[in-house]
Length: 72
Image 1: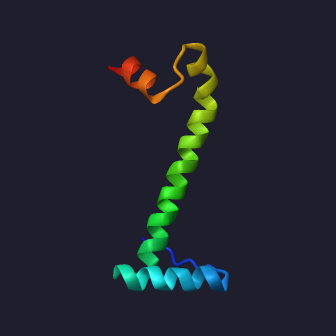
Image 2: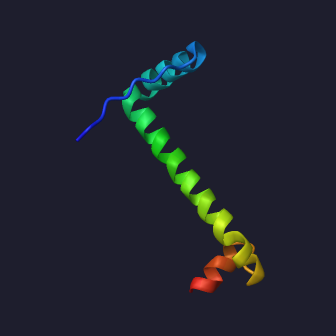
């Protein structure tokens, strides 16, 4: 199932989206879907980091390298 969503953009952003779509040969809907998907993934990641960050710090896990060491 699909849902149609109407979004109001500032003119400058709309123009930039038009140019990007034209220059890449992609349609605006796909660009917006991909952008929203990336945004939602980043927000989920930030929420996990906020929740687990203090616990990880207590365990001495402060970098990506520390994470890889801990899980391998």
